[in-house]
Image 1 (cartoon, rainbow, N blue to C red):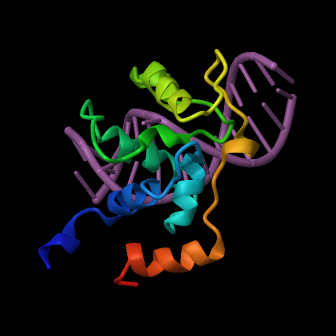
Image 2 (spheres, rainbow, N blue to C red; image 1 turned 60 degrees about the horizontal axis):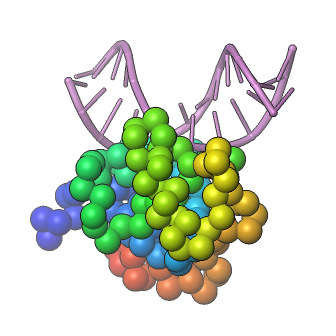
Length: 124
DNA sequence: GGTCTGACCAGGG
DNA sequence: ACCCTGGCCAGAC
């Protein structure tokens, strides 16, 4: 079981993000909360930063935005890409990189959460 | 080990 | 709406 030694925080972040449906988004703080690390919003961003330039993976990183309903990746140079990806999923993003959070934010329902407990974190 | 950092957040002026 | 501040916590050095 050597795989349990890896950073589980990172793994949880990615596992949760993979569940976000197309056309929906979650905030950094929300992700942190749902994986059991409330307040660790910045760490979520850090974990995603770890994806590096290899954004061609199966993690829909573009569906994670800040609590103001805006894109936070302009500072690392992938803002325009994120905006384009979101728009390609049907999300309306304005020129300032902001969108209607109330409309697009996704929350897993209780059943999904319960399912996630076993599907994502079997060790719990 | 301490110290600094950051794809954040909420609150106050 | 804008700017600033303090807090947050996992990583990197």
